[in-house]
Length: 327
Length: 289
Image (cartoon, rainbow over all chains, first blue to last red; front, side):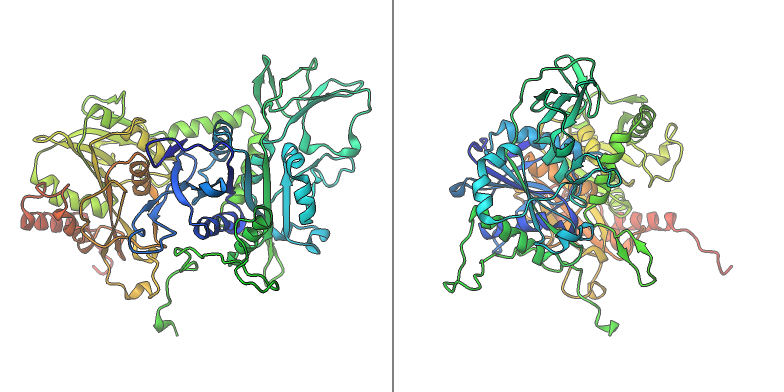
């Protein structure tokens, strides 16, 4: 749940929420650190749950002695009111079996706080790329359908590459296609929660619940079959008195009401574990191409350098100093 | 995946635990009713229970709801526990008010149902003369999936007001990040972390970034920070994690703090008690006899 630092709850309506997925190389989290540090965002609260491993430390964005003693915990919310930007930072990993619970709590907070849109910064294993991906840019994006409608033109103008769908079962030619983000942590779960489910039935078969993101375009049923957009029917949940599960065959079609879809974008980079600071800078700059949070410092157009402020906590990333006797 | 020098393909470890999450998702989808029952049984076995050993009853409400508290002092780990035993518990009359019973893979005892009094590792006491002073001696490891449960059973869901929390614990000096080599550090040494609402002076320097704290002390401090309770954590970095006189004695500067001042009455006597505690627990090596 969100607990404000101050006495009153801040107003998030109209704001963009940026958050990381805990993913390979911690790239999303490092990118969020850069954004919070560079834009000097102020801490406005905590997203306190029992889903992440507890940790505490002093202010990771300290700039002076005075502000270096503020305690930070594992999930904190920062804001930049002038840009209607809110950042949620996650600083530890999920407790086993708690990642789904976290996704539910997070999206419930997003909906109740009326955030305009959510941007998830993530990463995926570079060794899982296919041949095409190896030869192209390492950055990818994903948009939920309503977000697609909203920012289609902007994304087109940026010439970005959408994350490719891959067959769920590679050996099968008519396999459904789905979005797979290996090493992406909760990225896929968050993205799919913002996606509608489809209830459809074949001419001869019974109605079946399928997730829109798994549809293989070439295997869509004949025109005589009907599709119902079920909006936010949750996997395994009760709706209209009927419990529906993914892939389940139903005795009769169910008309479901559409719940609000989430305006969500996922921005990710293919990375390997190692020194992921350059990857974080790359991902932050990828986000900046869209949101234009910071402008290049130098007047010289080529190459423009963005003035990212490295947080003061980004030191000794690979451990303490070495004993001189070692050499 | 990565190929080793010998050409075998191995799964590269992911420091974010992200691999586990993908597998977890797949597992959850394939979970049969039997798996669910097993998972529930394991969760039940790992449940944190708070009970009164004298009456063998479970506490119906959280500990601090039942026993209003103005000072809550928690020792986590054997050296912090030994320090409080010698310097604080021997200087007053303390009555046991509860005990946290829990099981995880780190516990020495395999019998989770009939833990004998000497095996219960997380015990709560209050000072008979001032019952609002509560002390917790926690020498067992509280696993990450049990830490929030522990917080819920002890602190409860309503934020407690008018209470100050002091936590004492140890960590190995190799966990301390510094630009010099950790071998050159004068261990044991104390560092502190405090919540925003803690206004008293601290008894040592504050823990600098990029150092962080995990486990139960971090869970307690996070709770206090979020719910605006004044709390301080004193962390002793040591190169001896087993019971050690120097490490336990390194907490002595904390006796000058507001929460512990007045609780430790006879320092020389306490030092002797500490020495005796060490010898009692020493495993006599007979390898050469």
